[in-house]
Length: 269
Image 1 (cartoon, rainbow, N blue to C red):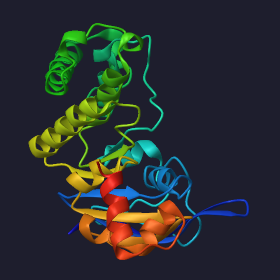
Image 2 (cartoon, helix red, strand yellow):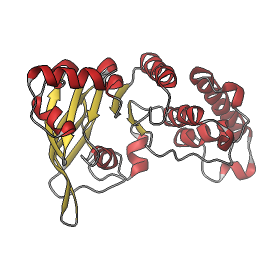
Image 3 (cartoon, one colour):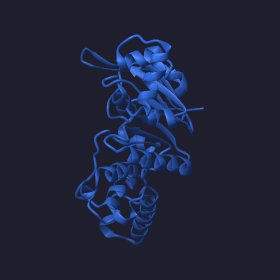
Image 4 (cartoon, rainbow, N blue to C red):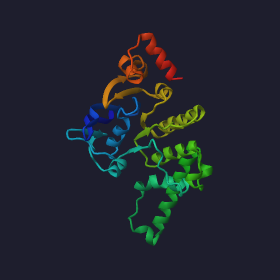
């Protein structure tokens, strides 16, 4: 069963067609990869699904069977869609724990004015939220940095905090926009190990944009390939890596079967 569905999904910026009538299903419980050359429309797709951009007329986005096309971002988040960003957007002056609490805020159960008077119900809810977020920090390996300003973390730790803040929203669908960008091979393995652990613990569905093909080929159940806003390939990783149109989109030339396999093998190392 598809958790996320797009039908005739399109987005234009003036005369530029960034996404063109894209039809895509992300199956519940799966790890779905979205790849393509720079400028192929991957981040635009994320922005359309999560309400950052408005779609063109005729587009449809469904989540868990509900039409969420052009819902506001907070409404989509409340329904169980969370994402990370290619460029990290953390609150540098706030502590690591406070950054997670920002992600958790949609689950607070008291009224907006209640914190002013601080009744026992608010104190109890805040304590429960802090305990829950500290547990999440333990899972992602940042518990010892809970009281540290986020701006003092290393690059790899900031990537983990970005992941944690998305998880704080308690998503059903977690969308990761180049989660391994800028990380060393060792840290990529650590990050993806944590991602897979989170998937197992919380029964997540994952949609991953990643330029490191090894991550995609080793972890994804299904891969969709974009080029110039259009879907040019889709299937299991072993099917995609043997697709001439996919390889040509990346390398810009026709190749023999042997060259196709060699190119993907080299990129996936």
